[in-house]
Image (tube, rainbow, N blue to C red; front, side):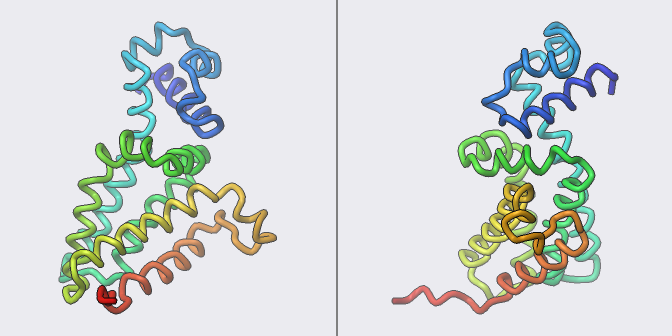
Length: 206
């Protein structure tokens, strides 16, 4: 990747984290990156292509890591709910710890359902969601599919909440909830999510 292209991606990510996608113009990005508009057009052709590139740069490695972990856990049979939760959550938390603008940028997108659906889910998460649903079905074969789909959705919800609120969790909990310790955060999230995944089937009557 060229230095100019990296500068543009870094600037866009930084500004998306601060002001959101809709609140950031190409002029803002070129000013922050120290490049001209022609450079953006040369490397990305359009604002929408630039947005897609910024998102893909962070999400694709996360999804690759997720699949690697899940494949390894399933090498000798169904993965446990704890392993499934870890494979889903840990790569996101690790990436967020490594790239300081990723959590606030993704948090803004996750907080806007239509934007999330258009820019992230359809392109980057639909296939991953299906892969994890299949893994859950093998791990918890007695649960109805509807329960499994809801529980997968709730796991995403836990992840989205922590990402979106990561910047203020320490403040509103007087320092008790610190997202900087990725290992501790992962253990707590996995324990909580796995307990929900393993809960008895929901009674749909009444």
